[in-house]
Length: 107
Image (cartoon, rainbow, N blue to C red; front, top):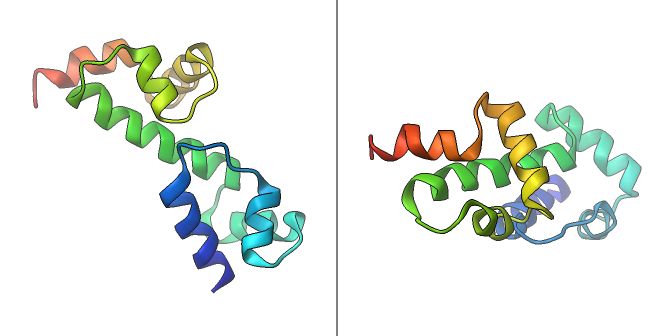
């Protein structure tokens, strides 16, 4: 299905810069239509879906990888460390370094 192709593309490329225009081309839909049906199905916008995948990936790396947080932000596709940290904090209730310190000892 067109939405399936879009979701699959996102899951393989979420660390890259993905535009709605690219995804609309993959689906064969106008980008506004694609965003509307995607949001209906996933209960979040395409942009939010991508950010959530990036955050999930970042959480894994924070506890399993010793790289600096700014590097993890970049690896996960965030345009800046500041943007990553503020988004991460908003979603998780703690900063990336607090998250790392809290969960690294468990693993």
